Image (tube, rainbow, N blue to C red; front, side, top):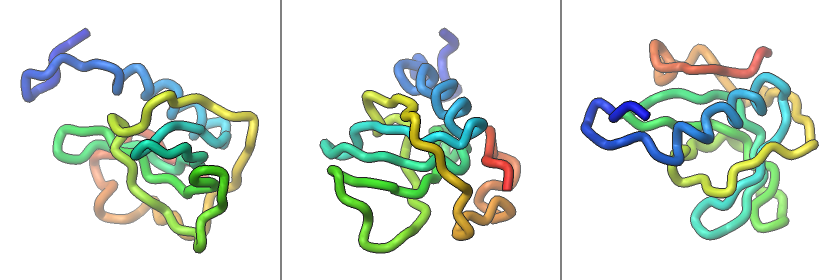
Amino acid sequence: MEAEPDGRAGGAVPDTVPIVFEAIVKQQAIAATYNRGSVTLAPHIIYTKHGEIYLDAMTIERDGQPPKEPKIGAFKLAGLSGLRITPRRFRPSELFTPGDAKYEGVTLLAVEL
């Protein structure tokens, strides 16, 4: 495994990237542990920011409950553990704006609208 530009050796994070890519392409939800809670996410885009990999996703469930309101949240990929694809399919959210300036030049993969 190559060292990251800041000298860190790439660890578990790069191993999760192919899982996220597959989930985005197939529009399938992913399940993971985030901040010690279980989450089910609809991944919309994976991108880099400050040398880290981020995922913007719609939260479908957090600890078994739907969110109070739909929104696209940013998740640091390193913070998602036990990441796996679920059989649950999703449609891209109208709240997702792939043309947002924060994605310009740093997008690795995004859902097709």
